[in-house]
Image 1: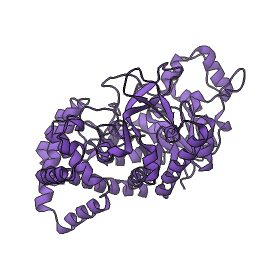
Image 2: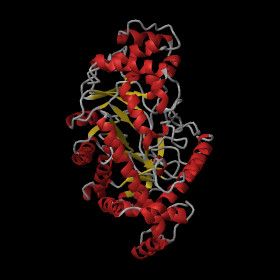
Image 3: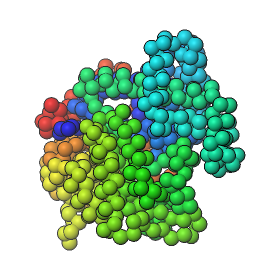
Image 4: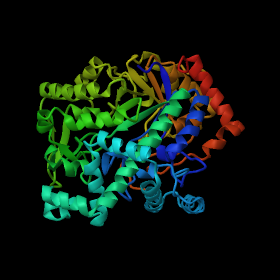
Length: 512
């Protein structure tokens, strides 16, 4: 079991290393790991690595929840890629870091060169390892590769617009398509093999340096995904998952994700979810389950704009039984991989009680933790959190700590400082400085909570955001570190910041 640690929260796409193409890649994890250890972090927590369609920014809207996005592959050192072409591509893409369509196309073109070189010149052992990877992942890889090739062939239209035999997966049509698209299918399988090889090597190297990796399991694949096309019977495509009406949305939220066919998933022993967890186990030491309440009760709408939503299952007793069946499947497949639950938002008490019985920590977001049962709710001190919890200053969807503080009414600032007994933090100030941030983080680190998760923005006191929910912008899901990781520890300011954070981790027994 992972002990008492601090984790740095940063998306893989946000890494900035000397050899990437303007978007973080797997090789960037090594210098990121070196910086994380210097800061006292023992785990790097990532967002989903799932492959998304061209132009899709959100990692929670996946074209495949099993495939690693090829845009994360490291090109440096891959045989078959000319050094001059790679340098030219790096220069061109770093000038347009938010043009993800161009970034993906450039990378796939170069990867195709590496694939052809592998096919024609790789050793028998390398070909054998690739074949072994394909056999070990036969429960998802062939269907994914065919889906990916068909998406290209039909110019990315919905799979509902493919010829009937392909839309409804007629065996004869699938066999003919597999034969006709043999080369692109082989390419997409090879991409996943290389991703697996690079990831396994990086994970091993990081572990030797005392750094673990955390992943994130999105609630569901998107409608236009390999898994939904392959397993159409496992989803109710006439309904879309979302959230019920609340103070933030009077009509509820429609996320566009297909509604799981829970009765059939139950009948099949939750094989689909088990596959996802087994796949995650190949990649991570810890897995975050996104929207965990949806595994107990899923809220969905019909396709009509004015349709009313409903929960499945409809009542609390059956929701508990259903949820615990799903969580049991997750825990069984997780093995030694640690599990945490994103239990934010409107979550009924029975869900958190159930997660506690499974030994799964939930979130304690410092700014939202109050004694809500009191007539005059006060902020809870982190020292009041339970050991079975994850203490954090924010998430990828919240504004950074310094922005939250800046927008907080003066009265709230005072209540926050006094409730948490933060000596030395002046609640009159509008701008938090490093020593102010450290006072807040020190209180968070000192919590009994098993984990302390710190978004990279809060570790450095930046106001950049990963995502602003409810908005469409090229600034969402595109932020990058403002420095090259290889040079970070040569910068006196960054080194000083790292030492300050490491001291907090040591003082609170989170860096042992």
